[in-house]
Amino acid sequence: MRYAVLFSGQASQHPGMLPWLESEPACAATLRLMSGRLGSEWRALLHDTQRRSHNSFAQVLITGTSLAAWAALKDRLSARPALVAGYSVGELPAFACAGVFTTEQAISLATERATLMDQSVVGLKTGLLSVSGLSEAAVLAACTDVHLECAIRLNAMQSIFAGTDDALSLATLALQTTGAVCKRLEVQVASHSSWMAPAAHAFAESLNQVPFATPYCPIALNASGALGRKPIELRQALSQQIASTVQWSSCMEAIAERQVSCVLEIGPGSALARMWNDRYPDIAARSLNDFQHLQGALDWIAKHTDS
Image 1: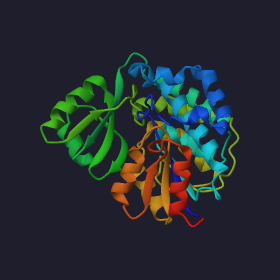
Image 2: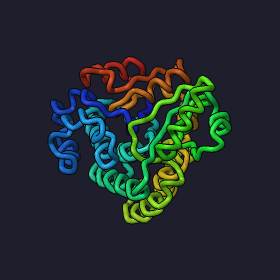
Image 3: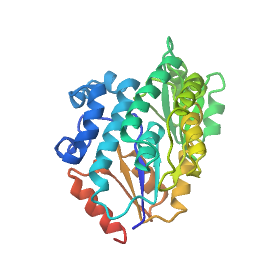
């Protein structure tokens, strides 16, 4: 039974996400930890688009709900994942899933990570812009007068760029004339860029105080796109990714090379599963959020693995 688990990142949260969480007893302990930081009405707050995109809410929410969902899944599966990866803040639940640190530590780290990232751009309005239909080089060539940085590499013709609000607006105007498709993400900071250097440095110091265990399976790391298991490299990669480009395309490649039977995305979104299916149609991928009930996901994994 060889399957991989991908943990969603920010910008995918919505009011109807993972509707069965609160009714699953196995989710309760993790949801209590998360609610202690966000409040018990966290799902109602998802109707407020401004609130749900704020770092201090979104990063804790993504981490907490993903790990609550994993808590409900893990004991009903006959084997652990062969590999895991997390997209952006999704690395925190991915590390916890693989046994590097606890769920409580992951939620605490999500709170700290969000605070440090917000502090790095105090007084600035920054964000992220998804651009598809052009290569990264073509995007930067079309925006030579605008300060953009590649935040996330998705594939040859789609990347996500960080910048100030003004820069992203100017870039959108310039890029739309080339036929590129541009979309602002529900993220209020210039993640994975040089704007986040102070946050990455401070988070690295905090991580030095957190015990890291050797994971039970390899983790595809955002910072390098390679698989890692050594605590020293995991600790470095987890802080480094805050201020450097996420190599998500390489992460997918590293997982595919291990010949897993299927890939399950855990979290509120389905973008990672869609990207996987576009790139690797011979390896089935679904998002947990596609299923109205947990049993549907369990049945799907069983169908696509040698159990």
